[in-house]
Length: 83
Ligand SMILES: [Zn+2]
Image 1 (cartoon, rainbow, N blue to C red):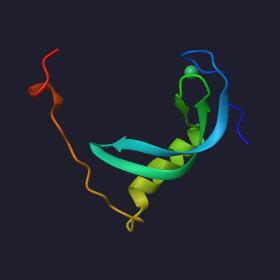
Image 2: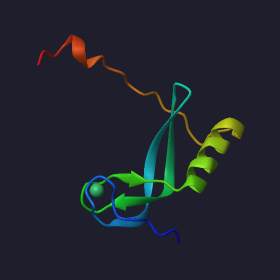
Image 3: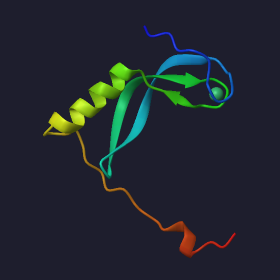
Image 4: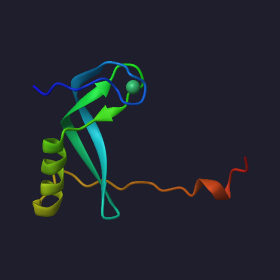
């Protein structure tokens, strides 16, 4: 199992886990489930190994049949809220 270093944002402990990951690639959004990643126990930042990133991008390029495709709602926030 990969050993993650301390969180580079807050210095917290990063533990191995499996996560649901939003991944943007060339303007498209992909969701991967059950991805091995490191999670900071303090701030929740996710860390992926180079191997996992490579695998994700390989799947995006090669995969033809996805397990599921879902519609993603989009809202342009700035038009409705003035801060
Ligand atoms: Zn952190």
